[in-house]
Length: 294
Image (tube, rainbow, N blue to C red):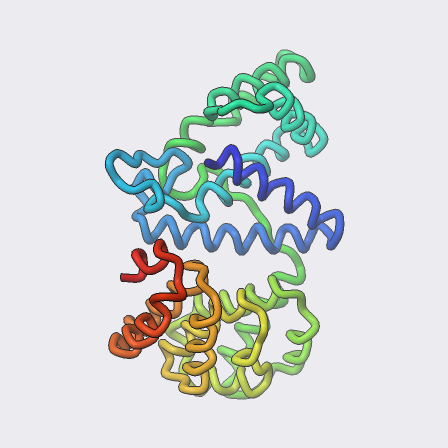
């Protein structure tokens, strides 16, 4: 699956970098890494489902579906750029597509094209050096995080994290630059929320209310922000979020957005409410979503 989805994410981020700038693309890669790691933890870091080569056996293939082929697959190509250079990776991808057009492929097919490309475009010594730096077996088959830690941080990303930290350490006061949040694009707002989630034990109900008074996140139209903010608020007992969350899970059916909210209700001892909301929407949700939420 990563040969399809990882490549797609890689090229999508190339396009977004051309349109919105490289930092925009890197921030999305940073968030993708967080989502990927969350799915790995849910499966178990030693589970093959936390790899690019899931051993499905007699299980339903859908049960192995996650962000992992998207994001770890993307990271393979991102890492190859650090070894070969961006232009060479684009040429490698073109060669791979031209070689295997209209075919089903396995990852060894891509490795063969990779090896051929190195021999055709690099000196013997450089080709050998790149091959030795690329541990395909570990990248593809080993569960858990990639064998190489890649840096996706940008100046704006750090600033959004810092704003969250200022709220946490601010003693109930608004940071001096808190209005900058309103000018950020979606992914930077999500980084801010992810930083709050990462500091979950330091976030209390009063802080949630203070942030909402300043930034009005509860009324956001952004589903990516809702995915983080609503579960956080539910777990912290912030009542104004509940009806917004109820409306949200009753108006769309993506598991990506549904599961965190239902899980937050269960985690905060609100199972009867979760069952009520689920039963209200059981005929609206896709059968797969119904099966997964049960």
